[in-house]
Length: 199
Image (cartoon, rainbow, N blue to C red; front, side, top):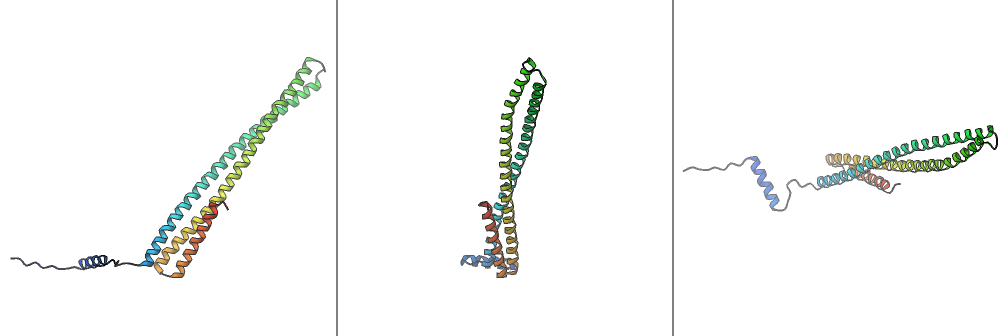
């Protein structure tokens, strides 16, 4: 016949205590302050992630439009060079007409060339001006998006500062620090709203 002895260690005692506490609907480590700070940190981290994504998207789009504007500027410069070349040909044709004998075949050909180059220049000029308007539009769009990027970045920074203050609040348990964290978070949310509304 063997006698069995049951020896409880500290771990067993702690497990029993937690089991009893849960059985009565209590939490052994229940700390509402810590729980609120953890929830606040999670919410702020989510908001910060959204702001960071928006900041990156705005910056990428701003760079895209700036790049498109640079490409169009080159295209417009090419059109203006083409326009200038047609103008030079027109000037040479006018010079040829002035130096040739009026009524001669050469004089008639030079006058025809002058008319031809004048007609060819107008669509080129109109196209160059249209491209320049597109450049202005894309530059404006780029600047608008870059302004939005800066607002999103400011909002993200404020949210990150608020998260850091929340962590310090959790360690120090100072209510004024919690209030400061909430104030900085509110400022971050306002900057995010300004970025969303393009202010």
